[in-house]
Image (cartoon, rainbow, N blue to C red; front, side, top):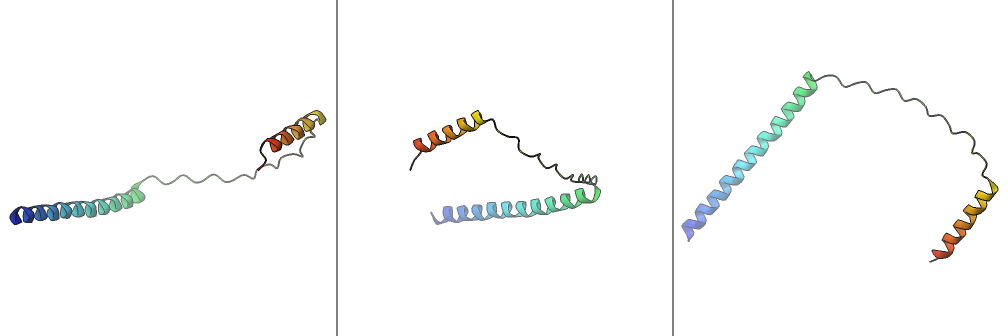
Length: 83
């Protein structure tokens, strides 16, 4: 049993070591590729200049019938959703 446990621990340590080494290589490869792309890649396009937005015009007047319908709808909503 002890020999089997020793082999299992050796296998686990070897597997974790290989994964660790692979991840370290992957990090360095990613960093290297990033530096190469920044150096030899096409330049980033210039951001377009922001144009100021036009202010909305003065609000148009609401039809009295529409205003009354909105008031009734709000009153009905509030009466149904009281706490």
